[in-house]
Length: 322
Ligand code: UDP
Ligand code: MG
Image (tube, rainbow, N blue to C red):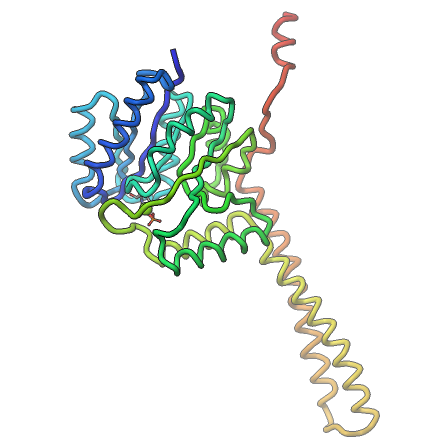
């Protein structure tokens, strides 16, 4: 008896690709079951994220036709990240491992057996990492690169070139679900879970059919969410700006005094110059102090778990001594 796998697939207006997706994922699942890599109870779970087309009709059709397909339908569009989280929170009860993958077949399904193999080797988190971005536009490639380096500078640990294609063990999923925050940026949260992780490389393909559901505006919003949910570095930036302004004000003060003594100035200029720079600096520093407190509130209200245990022998020992 092998471990049970659930493949979670978020779908938003994906009627063009779904017939192919269910076929390809079905084949892979069958292959895994035949080779005793996963149990016969393993499933594909489609999460319909408020699609306006025939996506849900197709999903219902597949659920009645194939025993290994299940579906869940949102009341409206809640977004990709919420769809993933919903799928995982349903699947975690019945699965030992969960793979999340987009519906559009851009991520190579042939990486799945390798992920499962790594799971059996004892890894809890297995990232799908694309080894080429040739199919992405030049613009998307550049912006993605800039984003990863910005996040790194802000102190956020992301796995470059990995999206939401990954395998999580049951305990890693549970740990991820214990993050109570509302602004989801899963690819930033998964590395925080810890545990032993591995990477599986694959070539990212073109979308099989249909259009991207991430237009530029949604992408920018997502990137901004990533920055503001994980970093209070922008607040520190205000502090540095304030300090810089105060330093400039000191230089200004010396310059103004020299000018005043040598008598080159109009009445009132010295005091104006000094107050503008000095007050500006003081105000920026004050804002950053208030910001520090807001930053603290921000991390408190997220209620992130304070620790996540990997191995412990204490409970066992206590049980035995009963
Ligand atoms: N998706 C979703 N809800 C949304 C937008 C997208 O569930 O509001 C799903 C979509 O169906 C797909 C995945 O998220 O399975 C990734 O979207 P897409 O392929 O359009 O993004 P891209 O690959 O262009 O970044
Ligand atoms: Mg896609």
